[in-house]
Length: 257
Image (cartoon, rainbow, N blue to C red; front, side):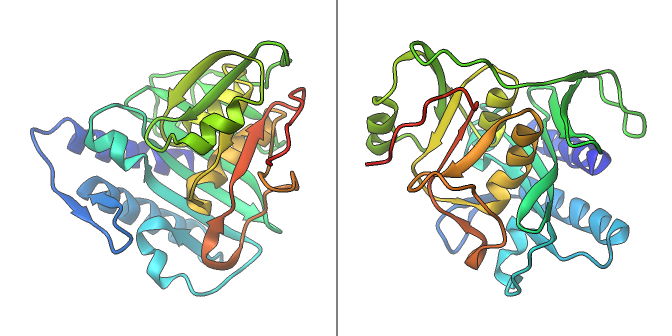
């Protein structure tokens, strides 16, 4: 999974650094680029060869995903396509393994930022230092959520999907500082203690969140539904998520209403 994320990241950056690239619009009105499609093909081929008996769910093949399962691989080959198109750098490659509805392994690679996060076999999460070799992992550092101060919270929110509902919810907290970030990097910023709280009051799909969710869990964090604060699970109808909150456990969560 790590190697495939790096290979996909290299392909994405090749297109990102080119003079121009084509942007198409999918049936749900979201953008897609040749980088999304080429990264999807590369990762899908690699995962199907390595895990031939495991169901594979990817964003770019979503129309074919009619079977629901509790255990599966799930991929967003280029999360943050809008950030990619606008050359803002906040995009990631996300690969995760979900077992019994829970994302237990995940890789999040931000090639333009030079940051890579993943879970280890023991369930803990690390950030690997670059430069990244395809075959041999470099030095890694364990990551862990912050000891949050509820009188001065660090909050991260979406760069491309910020709205009034999100701001209203954030307004319930005593906030020391706000960050904006794209893609699944928001989960990773909570996982490393760079933020305490990430509320998402907007549409997401499971491939957007599974890898970041796994990394955050391995760093001691939690992801719950926005409405009732129950754990966010995977393998839902249509692979669609409800609104959710990702946070360090010391954060005193506020009700949705």
